[in-house]
Length: 117
Length: 115
Image 1: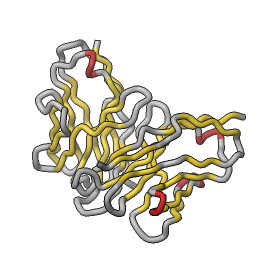
Image 2: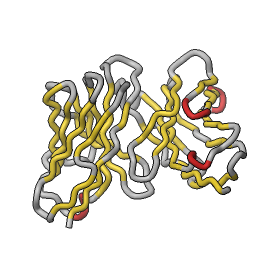
Image 3: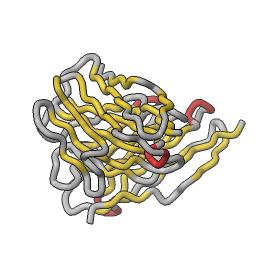
């Protein structure tokens, strides 16, 4: 159990376009989802925390108007990279937890590789 | 400030040899501790976790880790490494930033396994 999927697994887009990435919890309800960004050969950088039915909480330095997060249901969160530029190219990973209580394990999706030309 | 340190960026071991990956943390209270493994181009898979209780934790794929409060460490071990264990390993600590389930990750240790 605790399977998280992401779609698409990779995407190539032109500079200036917007890209939407979906994160789904397949066999559990995820009250909280997290979005991370990972640069080559580096660790994960938390971008934002997404709770179902409420606005996402962004980490310092992450542009909320650039990275739009929607957590419309208990099994789906989306990250939209608006007006993408080459510097947005990265590996984006989501994770999900079942409960809001403590402690809880984060289960990760397989990631989405974004390349902006 | 809360932090996680993985001192070894890259480790190479021979297949069948034992393995220990180091993780040290800085945290004001008893942390929740995790080890995740990431294969190239993939997401992270949970190997094991420590919340409380027995300080020696068993995980999947034959891995174990020991929480040592006095040393602020949570090192990952495996008695005999298999070629399929080649991957990147991340130690993580929580809760971070006052939020219940937020984690802070170490910089990772890349494990290579030679025949």
